[in-house]
Length: 146
Image (cartoon, rainbow, N blue to C red; front, side):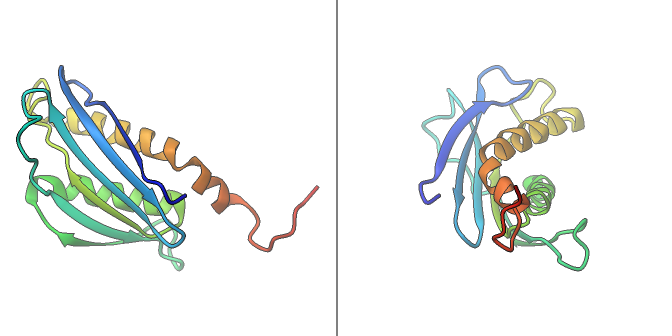
């Protein structure tokens, strides 16, 4: 899959803000960029946010390794958790850039609102990565069982 997937979906608990997702799957890695924008913010640029690299740990598969390449305090925890989860689920290295702002949610970004946004991003991203997940689960020796 060389063509990037670009889509948007509503930010949970927000009236007019959407999460924009840009996903590129390459042979050796996955690149994911996330941001938010509302109708009134459409003309203004969005700050970069955090950028994290994560990869599966072959010695401890339940704990992927992650390193922050660019740190912006309001987004680093969300970005790191997302990168580690996707690396664990896909068993591939992943780069995640995230500038999602929860300021437009009902209470301005409470823990519950952040978890709802996180769950929605994971749900949408994993649905798009389904073909990658199927390739990970397939036998690696090339022998088909019938």
